[in-house]
Image 1: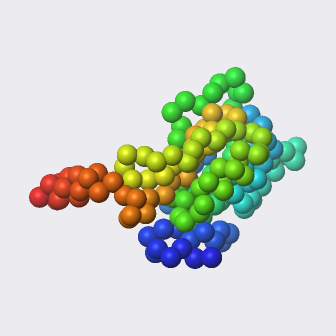
Image 2: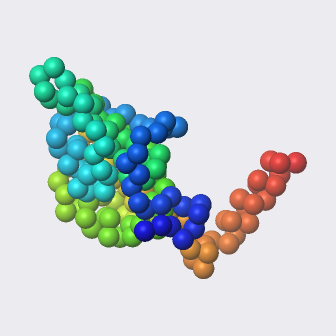
Length: 162
């Protein structure tokens, strides 16, 4: 399935190897539980698992859409909650309500939303067991857009370009 809007990411997961312009690495206390949360709950796929000398994974590479990569690595103390770590991914035309339902049924984290933001997006927040916050965000449809906010954004961009 391809997104009807070229500015949105394709909902097809690209499992190809390419240079990632950006990614996030989360240190986690339980590799298996974290992997299950992101794969079964949030819809990522497992691209690679790098085993350490004892055979336990030392790195798990996960991906949703192109350029939406998370690397999981062991090392977080379960009593040391992540603070301020947040990554947002464009959700394309994915049904955020359905994704929230799937993730809510998966142990290993919490789900909040989706909720409407004042800046014309719908955001779905996930917090894993180690405290990392992942947000899937998508623009609201033009018919539902806060036109006053959109006007203020356009005006501020115009002023910045002058």
